[in-house]
Structure formats: C-alpha cells, structure tokens
Length: 337
Image 1: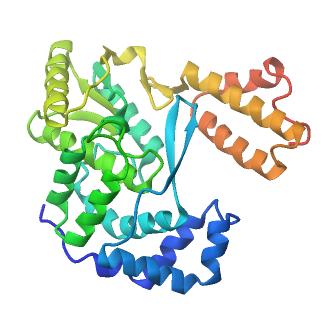
Image 2: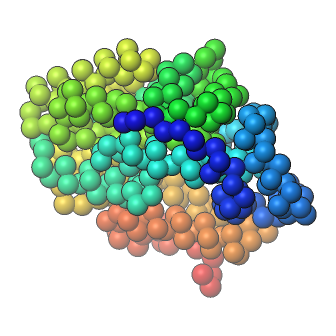
C-alpha cells in the first residue's frame, strides 16, 4: 500500500472543521467549553485549523477518571478543542486506515461493529470444529510507542500529520514508551491499526482462513486441534515478538460447546447472553431504576439508557431471561414505562 501524502489541507478546511465540531459536540452541547466555542465558532475553528496546519496544536490536556464496568480502567477525557481536532484528523484519515484493514477486522469500521463480528463468528462456528479465543493483557496500556509510530509512517507521508500523530502518542504513558489514552478517538484508530498488522501476517503468512478480530479480541478457527494449536502458537509468538505484547492464556475448545465473545456465547444455532452480561445488565437496570426514584436520573436519560441495554439483550436468544426479570428483580422497571 502506497503512503498517503498531502492530507492537511483537507484536515484544516473550514468545512471539515465544522463537521468535526458537530461530531464532537454530541452529548456535550451544554458544556461550558462548547458554549464558549459557539460564541465565535468560525474564528475558533479557524484557529484550531491554523494550529493544526503549522503543527503547533497542543495535545494532552486530559482529565482523568476511572470507570469500573466491565472492569476498572482509567479514562483520559480530552479537552473540547482536542476532541474537535481528533475528529478533524480522523474524518480525513479514516479511509486510509480502513483500506489497510482485512475483512476479518470489525472494530472502528462503519457498517461493521459488534453485531457484524458476532454474525461472522456464528458462520465460522458452524463451519469449523475447533476455536481459540485470544486477547491482549492490558491492551491499550501495552501498545509500544516506537512500533506504533513506525506503523503510521508506513501509511502516511505527510510530515505535519505524522508530527501530530507523534505528539498524540507521546501525550500519554502508562509505562515508559508504552500506552495509548483510553477514551480518545485517535486511540481507537491507532490501536485497531496496531493489531491489523498481525491480521495481515496471519492471513498472508500463516494462511489462517477462519478468523475474527474485534480490537484485541481474536478468534481463530480450524478443523482439528493440532492444526489450531500450530496456528495459535505461531500467532502468539508473532504478537509477542513483533508487537511486543503479551496475550492471556488462550481459550481452546470445540465450537459445539459455544464460544464466549463480546459479551455473548456463540453457538451453532443460537446467540446467548454470557452470564457476566446478564449480571451486568441487571446491575445497570437496578442502578437506573434507583437513580430515577431518587431524582438523579431523568426520565429521558432512563429511557435512552434502558433502550440501549434492552437492545443488547434483544440481540441474543434471551426470551426466558427477559420474561423472568420482572418477577425475580422487582423494581427494575418503573411503572408506566
């Protein structure tokens, strides 16, 4: 793939910056930083564009907080001007990143996503007898800065753009020379690209035919245990040595027993909720109901969040689980909803 050059004029165009502002403002319309930027929207966007064009835009003004679902993670919340800059960069760079992805990659790609990955896993579950599930230990925190930047340099040629990418990468460290800030739009693209190098190697050198990857969650398939373990061992070795990342112990089993993947369990003829997902669903619905009763959560917020949770559950074959909820978990559903 040829390196792409001369993207910064498009990144810094007022049209791109306006669209990037609209994307960045979603869910943040009432924040003071947004109100302040709206007071002179064109002037503020042109200022961001000029700083991006001349390479002086400052990245790394993060607010840090911790979330505990589904596990404890430190989130880096960027300032609003940074969010606009991230959107401006990725709107233009997205096609370049996407073109490098293989058909087995499903994260951070329009038209793909979680459910498309599950559909593909279901197809492969029916086709193959054995599977292995692999994932990276502390994925975002273990990404090597030097390797990440070298990968980006093989995609892009624009020196100003690469300078911005280096500043974004250097703006955060979980350990010396490692880590991407969780919560940044750029981190999703960078991390997904980081693993896509292993996708190409697995397809082109290891000749893996059955594979699904959603960010750092990887499924490999084969017809025999021996063939599968050969591919798993080779893949683990490649990730350890070429990407300098450590994987958890692989889960290896026959597909007829179900495949735990992305909060579900994929079976030959069905998609079921994982037990952890069931417990998480109940816990979140209880929290929403209590928040609504106490006035912490508005009726609109309750409805929106509950609909998202219900959509996650409805994707699976979960009728029995949903039917027992009102009886077993009294008070989750407020009256009238």
